[in-house]
Length: 190
View (cartoon, rainbow, N blue to C red):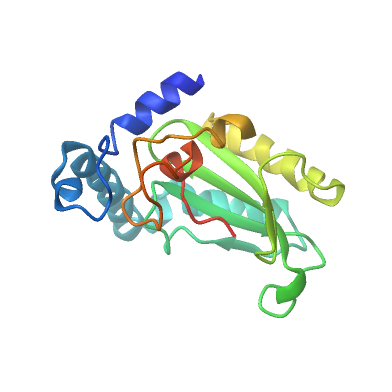
């Protein structure tokens, strides 16, 4: 999708020019639309977890990335995306906290798009130019998402585009601080 189309999609779910702490934000048509998408996703996950496409995808990742820890953090999200972390093979989450390196895949609930980023123990996050040791995971994850969902990867410059007149509902962001990744996926990257 073109950046303009992604911005138009975000505009359907986030009210223009209203801070997320203002009562008018939660009363807006856009917020109600976003709430419906999130409720539908949570309902599907709880009513028929075996049939939920995201759970099956994370199981696939577990098989495809043998020797790697795969963490489905969908249940913990209140963002319009599903997320999964695939740790590099030498990392044991929880034990190797200082060196926890992974590639994170985010699949939007608002548009047929996904994002990937590399992360190292919350010390840094990279949307582009992944370090060499991450490149194989990046390529394999991209191929699997595209094969499984048919979604398109959003390029890093588009993810970083400022969206000055909109803000996610539960983010510690003010108007003027949000980027497209914050709206289509999540403001929480670690």
